[in-house]
Length: 427
Image (tube, rainbow, N blue to C red; front, side, top):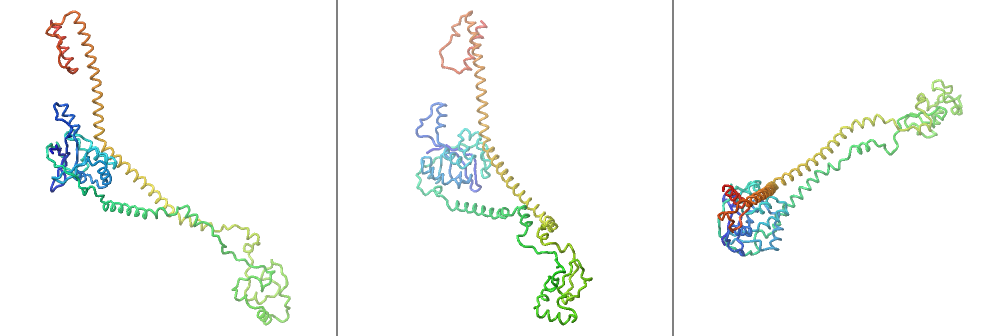
C-alpha cells in the first residue's frame, strides 16, 4: 500500500532514524474531483505513528498496560509493517492514552493534522525532547507499506513486569529511607514536655538536710546524738558497767535522771556529766534547727529554687535547638510543596502554549469576519438605495442588463453593482 509520510525529524545518531507521521488513505473514499473533495479526503485519512519511535522519544514504558488493553478492545486501530517489522498506532488512540497519563505534549502532537505539521506545529511540542533533531520544514514523501497480521508475540504486548517491579522497588526503598530519616525528627520530644519531665517533683521521700538535736530534758542514753550509731547500739549491761566504773561513788544513779529545764546550756549545767555526755558532748542548741514537729511537717518543700533556675539555664539551648529543628522541618515541607506546584504550573503552561495561540487566532478571525460582514451589508444597502434612485430616472441599458450567471460571492457582487452605477452616471 502506498502511504503518505511526513518526516518531522530524526533521532539517534548512528544510525539516525526518521520520526514520521504515516497517512493511510481510507478505502471507502472515492478519488477527489475538486479542491473541496481533496480537503474532505484529507480529513478522512487515517494518521498513524510508529510505536518504536514514540517509545524511544517519550519513554512510554509506564503505559504498556493501557496499550495492551486498547489493543485487545480495538485491534483495528493498530497496523504492522512486515517489511520493516514495525508497529503503528492511530493517533487518536495514542492521544487518549497520553491524556490518561498526563503526557500533554504527546497528546497535542497526536491531535495535529497534516497541515499543522507542515506549518511547524510540532516544533514547540518536541523541543522538550533532546533526542529529536527537528526539520524546519517537514519533508513529505510516499512509501510503500506491506501490511501484516499481529502474531500476538509483539514486544509491546509484554507487560514488562521486571522493569515495573524494579521501579516499584526503587520507589518503596526510597520511601522507607525517607521514613527512617524522618522518624527521629518526629519522635523527638517537645521542649515543653522535656522541661516538665526534668523539673517535675520526685514522687518519693527526700533526704532531710536539716540536723535536729534533741532537747536536754530527755534521757542522755536513749536520746538522739550526733555520734556514730555503733557506739549507741551497745547493750544495756555493758553500758551500766562502764558507767559504774567511771562515775564517782558518792553520786546516786537517780541523779542522772533528774529533770532539768531545756533552756539551760551544756556548759553551765549543775549536774554531773554522764559517760555518754562526756564521750560525745551534744552541740549547742540552735532555735532554727529545732522546730516543732507540726511546724516541720507543714513547711513547703521550696528550697530547690536555685536548682530549678540552673536546670532551666541548662535546658534553654536544647529548647532553642528543638524549636529551630521544628521550624526548619516545616519550612522544608512548605518549600517542597511550592516547588512541586510551580513545576506542575510550568508544565501546564508549556503544554498549553500552542492551544492558547490557536484559540486566540480563531477568536480574532471570528471577530474580524463578523465586523467585515456587517460593513459589507451596510455597503450593499447603500448601493441598493442608490440603484433605486437611479433606476427611477435612467432606464437600464441592454448592455448592463443583469445576466443569469453562476452565484458569486458577496464581494464580487458589490464590485459589479458599483461598476453598473458608475456607467449609469457617466451616461
